Image (cartoon, rainbow, N blue to C red):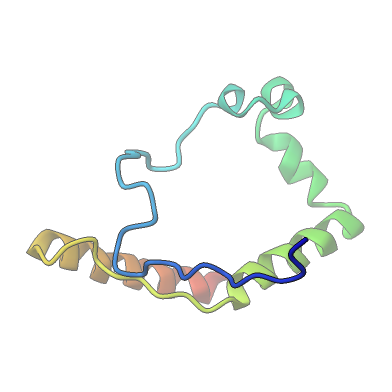
Length: 99
């Protein structure tokens, strides 16, 4: 019986995010398998956020995600990848100002 083991080192030199996904965030509510979302659409979540306890829990989750440090690196050394990184960083900084 092993009482301890070493954590595997993560290879940071390779891409971890799936780059073949081509989405801009526009998805149908029925794609997620969420019955409430499929029946009522995204408006149900807007209505839920008007309740104080739900909004407090959501903000706690949102702030914990936003407080984590992050690093954005281009997937390759091509000018397109470097330009995409610059645009993504600008969008992130703009979005951070709206939170």
